[in-house]
Length: 196
Image (cartoon, rainbow, N blue to C red; front, top):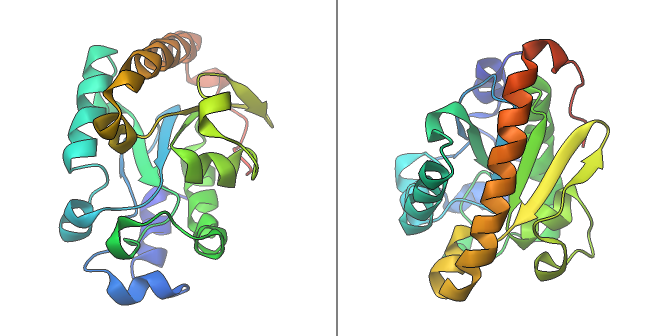
């Protein structure tokens, strides 16, 4: 299964009510063979218009953070837990995430990342622990089925709460170090499939 086939199959997804209000579905973008994947909450207005993840103010901050960590944005894969914009940019509901996670699982199977970074509470609850509080577990690596996952603050949160940027920068330095470690190990070590 390759990523292009996954995206073709879900390009007209209507499985949950979110599709009714979307302009464009936002499946994700980046390197389809990247060992590093970022998973945010859901598309905002800019993303809905352009059909690309993290292109608004929060996305620009994410790009700057990646650049500061010397991780080229085009070398990672970026997506969201839900692929259509929630009304008013609200947090995705649990049933929406549970429906959309099917697409995310297929993306994991196609990309086979070794490292997953969850940006914000919604993807952290969906992928790591339904009771997780981002302020308590951010910055810690959690291993599941051979995949290392780290929750950190969503860039939109950092725009509202600049004091969190120092903690987020610590997280991004740890992400950079793990990413370099994986790259140094070569593709031969990327055999395990992400199953979430």
